[in-house]
Length: 160
Image (cartoon, rainbow, N blue to C red; front, side, top):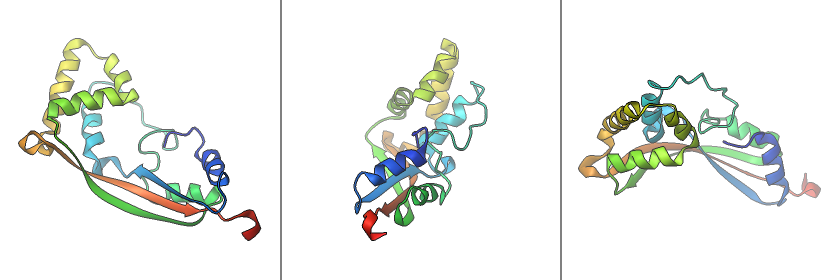
């Protein structure tokens, strides 16, 4: 998701071990991943965010089914397949602790938060916690999530 040129990176990765296999996991669409999406919805009300280039490095760069599989195929992998993985992100953390975690792990989010006044930052924190409240029954985090898993193999040059 974050390589400047995924095709070049995957060619390098697949050439490093002919006969090997590769598995990649990328986020599916933002709207089915509220762990990420709900925070983005709130912060975008406070910080102007231009539309993202769909091919620029980012968490949802390969959210469309088939996109990463196509790049992996173009990189020289064979037997490329893709599947959707649905799971839950669960942890014994409160909505407040979730906000602290999310605001610290994302460079993009940290940069946006730097643009806010102190009062805005407090409002964003409260609004995010309210926006995710439904995912914290009994004060424990439980988000639905979806990723796309792409796998492929690389045959030895003599076999192709």
